[in-house]
Amino acid sequence: MEDPLDQSVWPAYPPGTLGVVDSYRVDPGWLEGAERRLSFLVVDDSRAFPVERHVWGVLNYNLHASVLGYEETGGARLLGPRYALLRSSFWDQESFSGQGVLLVAGAADPLGITPSILSWWKPSWPRLLAVAGPLWAAELRSRCHAQILGRENLEVVDSPPDLPERMARAGRVLCTSSVTCYEALALRKPLGVFQVADNQLPIGEAVQAQGLGTNLGPWGTWGPEELEGWLRSDLPPPPAVVNPRGALAAAAELVKVL
Image (cartoon, rainbow, N blue to C red; front, top):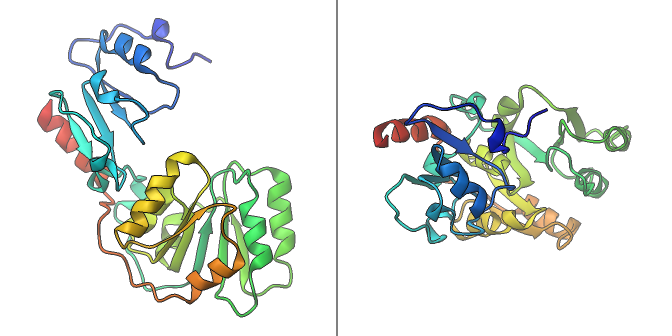
Protein backbone atom coordinates (compact mmCIF):
# COMPACT_ATOMS: atom_id res chain seq x y z
CA MET A 1 0.00 0.00 0.00
CA GLU A 2 1.35 3.45 -0.89
CA ASP A 3 2.33 5.78 1.94
CA PRO A 4 0.11 8.88 1.60
CA LEU A 5 2.93 11.00 3.05
CA ASP A 6 5.33 9.92 0.28
CA GLN A 7 5.18 12.93 -2.05
CA SER A 8 6.71 10.96 -4.90
CA VAL A 9 3.46 9.00 -5.33
CA TRP A 10 1.23 12.08 -5.46
CA PRO A 11 -0.43 12.78 -8.79
CA ALA A 12 -0.15 16.23 -10.35
CA TYR A 13 -2.66 18.52 -8.68
CA PRO A 14 -4.09 21.60 -10.41
CA PRO A 15 -3.23 25.08 -9.07
CA GLY A 16 -5.33 26.14 -6.11
CA THR A 17 -5.74 22.63 -4.70
CA LEU A 18 -5.96 22.56 -0.89
CA GLY A 19 -4.48 19.57 0.90
CA VAL A 20 -5.40 18.54 4.42
CA VAL A 21 -2.91 16.69 6.62
CA ASP A 22 -3.65 15.13 10.02
CA SER A 23 -0.67 13.06 11.13
CA TYR A 24 1.88 13.01 13.95
CA ARG A 25 4.49 11.85 11.43
CA VAL A 26 4.93 15.18 9.66
CA ASP A 27 7.80 17.53 10.50
CA PRO A 28 8.86 21.00 9.29
CA GLY A 29 10.91 19.58 6.41
CA TRP A 30 8.02 17.51 5.09
CA LEU A 31 5.62 20.44 5.34
CA GLU A 32 7.94 22.83 3.54
CA GLY A 33 8.36 20.36 0.70
CA ALA A 34 4.63 19.70 0.51
CA GLU A 35 3.78 23.42 0.48
CA ARG A 36 5.84 23.85 -2.67
CA ARG A 37 3.36 21.57 -4.45
CA LEU A 38 0.01 22.73 -3.04
CA SER A 39 -1.43 24.70 -0.15
CA PHE A 40 -1.97 22.80 3.06
CA LEU A 41 -4.30 23.00 6.03
CA VAL A 42 -2.86 21.11 9.00
CA VAL A 43 -5.16 19.64 11.63
CA ASP A 44 -2.94 20.34 14.63
CA ASP A 45 -3.10 19.21 18.22
CA SER A 46 -0.61 20.68 20.68
CA ARG A 47 1.71 22.82 18.48
CA ALA A 48 4.76 20.64 19.09
CA PHE A 49 6.53 23.03 16.72
CA PRO A 50 5.38 26.29 15.05
CA VAL A 51 3.51 24.46 12.33
CA GLU A 52 1.82 27.64 11.08
CA ARG A 53 5.14 28.92 9.71
CA HIS A 54 5.28 26.06 7.22
CA VAL A 55 1.72 25.83 5.88
CA TRP A 56 -1.11 27.98 4.61
CA GLY A 57 -3.62 27.15 7.35
CA VAL A 58 -4.11 25.53 10.75
CA LEU A 59 -7.17 23.93 12.34
CA ASN A 60 -6.97 23.11 16.05
CA TYR A 61 -10.33 22.56 17.68
CA ASN A 62 -9.04 21.98 21.19
CA LEU A 63 -10.40 23.97 24.12
CA HIS A 64 -6.96 25.48 24.74
CA ALA A 65 -6.04 26.17 21.09
CA SER A 66 -6.16 29.96 21.44
CA VAL A 67 -3.37 30.03 24.05
CA LEU A 68 -0.86 27.94 22.08
CA GLY A 69 0.66 30.98 20.40
CA TYR A 70 -0.19 30.44 16.73
CA GLU A 71 1.28 33.29 14.72
CA GLU A 72 -0.64 35.23 12.09
CA THR A 73 1.11 34.47 8.81
CA GLY A 74 -1.68 35.32 6.40
CA GLY A 75 -3.40 31.94 6.16
CA ALA A 76 -6.46 30.45 7.80
CA ARG A 77 -6.60 30.06 11.58
CA LEU A 78 -9.52 27.90 12.69
CA LEU A 79 -9.08 27.62 16.44
CA GLY A 80 -11.33 26.35 19.18
CA PRO A 81 -14.26 23.96 19.65
CA ARG A 82 -16.57 25.83 17.27
CA TYR A 83 -14.60 23.89 14.62
CA ALA A 84 -14.74 20.50 16.38
CA LEU A 85 -14.36 17.69 13.85
CA LEU A 86 -17.04 15.32 15.11
CA ARG A 87 -18.50 12.44 13.15
CA SER A 88 -21.59 13.32 11.14
CA SER A 89 -23.67 11.00 13.34
CA PHE A 90 -23.28 13.59 16.13
CA TRP A 91 -24.29 16.61 14.04
CA ASP A 92 -28.02 16.30 14.67
CA GLN A 93 -28.04 13.97 17.66
CA GLU A 94 -30.56 15.11 20.25
CA SER A 95 -29.44 14.87 23.86
CA PHE A 96 -31.64 13.44 26.61
CA SER A 97 -31.73 13.56 30.39
CA GLY A 98 -30.33 10.08 30.97
CA GLN A 99 -29.23 7.67 33.64
CA GLY A 100 -26.06 5.73 34.35
CA VAL A 101 -22.47 6.18 33.24
CA LEU A 102 -20.97 5.61 29.80
CA LEU A 103 -17.29 4.60 29.89
CA VAL A 104 -15.10 4.98 26.78
CA ALA A 105 -11.43 4.21 27.48
CA GLY A 106 -10.25 4.37 23.87
CA ALA A 107 -10.39 2.50 20.60
CA ALA A 108 -7.73 0.01 21.77
CA ASP A 109 -7.41 0.51 25.57
CA PRO A 110 -3.88 -0.98 25.65
CA LEU A 111 -3.47 -0.02 29.33
CA GLY A 112 -6.39 -2.19 30.40
CA ILE A 113 -8.32 0.69 31.93
CA THR A 114 -11.75 -0.81 31.35
CA PRO A 115 -11.17 -4.07 33.27
CA SER A 116 -9.66 -2.08 36.14
CA ILE A 117 -12.71 0.17 36.39
CA LEU A 118 -15.03 -2.83 36.11
CA SER A 119 -13.20 -4.42 39.05
CA TRP A 120 -13.70 -1.27 41.15
CA TRP A 121 -17.41 -0.87 40.36
CA LYS A 122 -19.62 -1.37 43.41
CA PRO A 123 -23.17 -2.78 43.40
CA SER A 124 -24.38 0.49 44.95
CA TRP A 125 -22.95 2.61 42.12
CA PRO A 126 -25.00 3.67 39.07
CA ARG A 127 -25.31 1.42 36.07
CA LEU A 128 -22.15 1.42 33.95
CA LEU A 129 -22.08 0.83 30.21
CA ALA A 130 -18.50 0.21 29.05
CA VAL A 131 -17.71 0.51 25.35
CA ALA A 132 -15.29 -2.03 23.89
CA GLY A 133 -13.52 -0.21 21.07
CA PRO A 134 -12.95 -1.55 17.55
CA LEU A 135 -9.21 -2.09 18.13
CA TRP A 136 -9.50 -4.01 21.37
CA ALA A 137 -7.53 -7.25 21.62
CA ALA A 138 -9.73 -10.35 21.75
CA GLU A 139 -8.31 -11.26 25.18
CA LEU A 140 -9.27 -7.88 26.62
CA ARG A 141 -12.75 -8.14 25.19
CA SER A 142 -13.25 -11.63 26.64
CA ARG A 143 -11.90 -10.62 30.04
CA CYS A 144 -14.29 -7.69 30.33
CA HIS A 145 -17.32 -9.74 29.31
CA ALA A 146 -16.34 -12.35 31.91
CA GLN A 147 -16.01 -9.69 34.61
CA ILE A 148 -19.62 -8.55 34.34
CA LEU A 149 -21.26 -11.96 34.68
CA GLY A 150 -23.81 -11.85 37.49
CA ARG A 151 -23.27 -8.12 38.09
CA GLU A 152 -26.54 -6.39 37.30
CA ASN A 153 -25.28 -2.81 37.10
CA LEU A 154 -22.54 -3.54 34.53
CA GLU A 155 -22.70 -3.95 30.76
CA VAL A 156 -20.05 -4.17 28.04
CA VAL A 157 -21.03 -3.45 24.44
CA ASP A 158 -18.76 -4.14 21.47
CA SER A 159 -18.18 -1.21 19.08
CA PRO A 160 -21.83 -0.07 19.06
CA PRO A 161 -22.88 1.59 15.80
CA ASP A 162 -25.39 3.64 17.80
CA LEU A 163 -22.79 5.13 20.14
CA PRO A 164 -24.05 8.72 19.63
CA GLU A 165 -27.53 7.76 20.81
CA ARG A 166 -26.16 5.72 23.73
CA MET A 167 -24.07 8.70 24.77
CA ALA A 168 -27.06 11.00 24.37
CA ARG A 169 -29.06 8.85 26.80
CA ALA A 170 -26.31 8.50 29.43
CA GLY A 171 -26.45 10.37 32.71
CA ARG A 172 -22.74 11.20 32.56
CA VAL A 173 -19.68 10.22 30.54
CA LEU A 174 -16.28 8.98 31.72
CA CYS A 175 -13.66 9.00 28.97
CA THR A 176 -10.19 9.89 27.79
CA SER A 177 -9.36 13.51 27.00
CA SER A 178 -9.75 12.81 23.29
CA VAL A 179 -12.34 13.47 20.61
CA THR A 180 -14.73 11.41 22.78
CA CYS A 181 -14.83 14.15 25.40
CA TYR A 182 -15.70 16.67 22.69
CA GLU A 183 -18.57 14.40 21.59
CA ALA A 184 -19.80 14.32 25.19
CA LEU A 185 -19.48 18.09 25.50
CA ALA A 186 -21.38 18.58 22.24
CA LEU A 187 -24.23 16.61 23.87
CA ARG A 188 -23.73 18.63 27.09
CA LYS A 189 -23.15 15.56 29.23
CA PRO A 190 -21.73 15.82 32.77
CA LEU A 191 -18.16 14.74 32.17
CA GLY A 192 -15.19 13.07 33.81
CA VAL A 193 -11.95 12.82 31.85
CA PHE A 194 -8.58 11.12 32.27
CA GLN A 195 -5.45 10.97 30.16
CA VAL A 196 -3.49 8.16 28.51
CA ALA A 197 -1.12 10.29 26.40
CA ASP A 198 0.81 13.53 26.84
CA ASN A 199 -1.18 15.42 24.22
CA GLN A 200 -4.35 14.75 26.26
CA LEU A 201 -3.03 16.49 29.40
CA PRO A 202 -3.85 20.10 28.41
CA ILE A 203 -7.32 19.04 27.26
CA GLY A 204 -8.07 17.62 30.69
CA GLU A 205 -6.73 20.76 32.33
CA ALA A 206 -8.91 22.93 30.09
CA VAL A 207 -12.02 20.86 30.87
CA GLN A 208 -11.46 21.50 34.58
CA ALA A 209 -10.39 25.14 34.27
CA GLN A 210 -13.33 26.07 32.06
CA GLY A 211 -15.87 24.40 34.36
CA LEU A 212 -16.88 21.80 31.77
CA GLY A 213 -16.33 18.70 33.87
CA THR A 214 -13.96 16.91 36.25
CA ASN A 215 -10.38 16.15 35.32
CA LEU A 216 -9.39 12.98 37.20
CA GLY A 217 -5.85 13.21 35.80
CA PRO A 218 -3.49 10.80 34.07
CA TRP A 219 -4.33 7.12 34.33
CA GLY A 220 -2.43 5.63 37.27
CA THR A 221 -2.75 8.73 39.45
CA TRP A 222 -6.30 8.06 40.64
CA GLY A 223 -8.32 5.07 41.75
CA PRO A 224 -11.69 3.91 43.12
CA GLU A 225 -11.88 6.60 45.81
CA GLU A 226 -11.50 9.43 43.31
CA LEU A 227 -13.92 7.71 40.96
CA GLU A 228 -16.52 7.39 43.71
CA GLY A 229 -16.05 11.07 44.55
CA TRP A 230 -16.82 11.96 40.94
CA LEU A 231 -19.89 9.70 40.93
CA ARG A 232 -21.22 11.36 44.07
CA SER A 233 -20.50 14.90 42.93
CA ASP A 234 -23.26 17.17 41.66
CA LEU A 235 -22.37 17.86 38.03
CA PRO A 236 -24.71 20.14 36.08
CA PRO A 237 -24.72 19.88 32.27
CA PRO A 238 -21.79 21.85 30.86
CA PRO A 239 -22.40 24.96 28.77
CA ALA A 240 -22.68 24.58 25.00
CA VAL A 241 -19.06 25.27 24.03
CA VAL A 242 -18.56 22.53 21.41
CA ASN A 243 -20.23 22.89 18.03
CA PRO A 244 -21.38 19.42 16.95
CA ARG A 245 -21.39 20.65 13.34
CA GLY A 246 -17.91 22.08 13.59
CA ALA A 247 -16.73 20.23 10.48
CA LEU A 248 -19.33 22.12 8.44
CA ALA A 249 -18.36 25.40 10.09
CA ALA A 250 -14.71 24.75 9.19
CA ALA A 251 -15.59 23.89 5.59
CA ALA A 252 -17.70 27.03 5.24
CA GLU A 253 -14.90 29.19 6.63
CA LEU A 254 -12.35 27.62 4.28
CA VAL A 255 -14.57 28.22 1.26
CA LYS A 256 -14.96 31.86 2.30
CA VAL A 257 -11.22 32.36 2.87
CA LEU A 258 -10.15 30.56 -0.28
